Length: 79
Image (cartoon, rainbow, N blue to C red; front, top):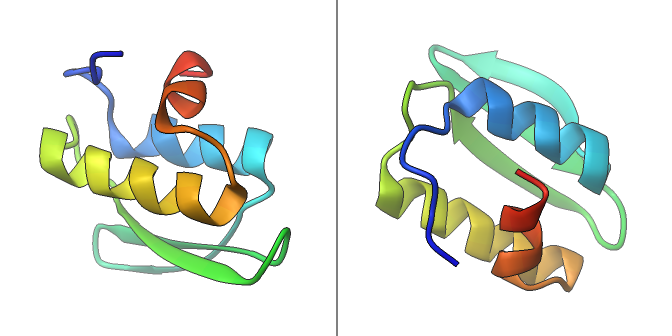
């Protein structure tokens, strides 16, 4: 599945909080720190940029998929 070219950081943050149990814990500049404890503890920094760069988005989706045990394509379908 092709990565969206117009996704911004705020939309991705909203998606991760709603569907994957992440909670916004801090913000440093334009980067928002999200954290979850299920299925295991994980923290990730999401840049609040518009739009997100393709490589950055791909790396975030790979990290989330690895921790949550889901495929990248499944996360993309929820966008």
